[in-house]
Length: 121
Image (cartoon, rainbow, N blue to C red):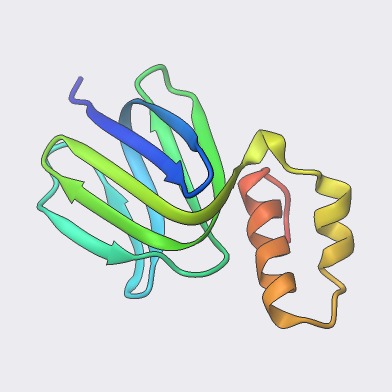
C-alpha cells in the first residue's frame, strides 16, 4: 500500500505526524484530496476548515484548522496552521454553544470544531 508522511503543525504545537494514505483539506480554491504520488501543491487553508487524515492503519484523524498553508510533495504533506485543534480534544458542548454566537468568525470556528469532532454543525 502506498503511503506518505503527514505533518499537522500549528503555531503553538505539533498536533499529529505519521504515515497516511489519504488527506483531505479545505483550501481557498476548494476542497482537495491528496494521495501518495500527488503533484506538488501549495495551498492556503480556509479559516474554519477541517483537515481529515486517513492513517495507514485505517484510522481517521480530524482537525479543525484556522488559516495557514498546505504543502504537498510526492511523498509528504505538511499542514502548517495558524491554529488547530484535534477532533478528540474539542469540547463539543462549548462548540455547540458557540454556534449561536453573534460573531460570524466564531460561528465558523465552532462549525469546524464540530465537523472535526465528527458532529454535525
